[in-house]
Image 1: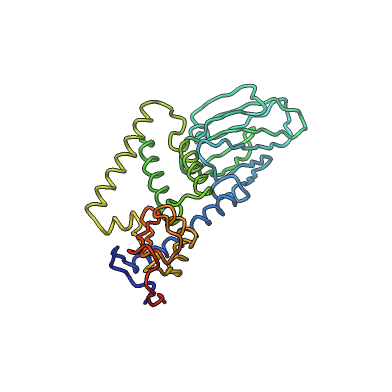
Image 2 (image 1 turned 90 degrees about the vertical axis):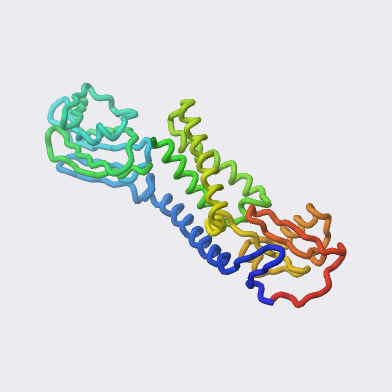
Length: 164
Length: 159
């Protein structure tokens, strides 16, 4: 008697369908493990595959290119020594549109909003490199293309993908 | 708008994950399964409601889930093929006193699981007292005891 033959009594079996279901099940298990692995790697946000650094002139930006909506993530701007007592960080309009700022460290002296984006002016120590950290989370899903520049210098361009 | 979309997505993704995990996860709950159920509920709840704690959002989500449940039950009645895809079909595990071990291995059911169901449902002591043991669509194991209540007459063992 074949164990995998369909029985008719007391239940009407379809072992061919059952065997196909088992194959789909096992494929599903592989997919679940792949999702967990993707999570660990940072492809789904927060991990080695996500952290990036982009440089332009004297500006360096460290950020997570894969982020998840509502999760706060830091964007670290490292600027070369300023010549005066102040330094101005300009971030483009998509950054202001797509992200909600939780905190900015250090707090800016003043801010100016324009059609091309946001200008944040910070106190600076002449000759000393500065580090500005913006903690922000996005409420919008999808790709966000951002540029940042310091004191009108070369602009660093980067993209951030937000998972829902 | 996104509340309804999130509710639909979470409903089908959760259904897919539980369906793919196999029936053992649904019926005959072990302590692992119980922990899993609690964690699944907690993990998805905040993702669905987000930061919208309004009464309107709560009612919207409940209405969406119930509508999905009713819609799928209607689909199941109208289409036997979809019914089999949406829910697993029952499968025999013990036939006339003999364990169908290859089926049990694929379904991840042990002899202990079957004996536990036999004791619980009919007070049976041995596999030989079971005429049929069936793994139901819900993951529960149901038992048809042999007519005399004693051992079933020996049959050719399933290959």
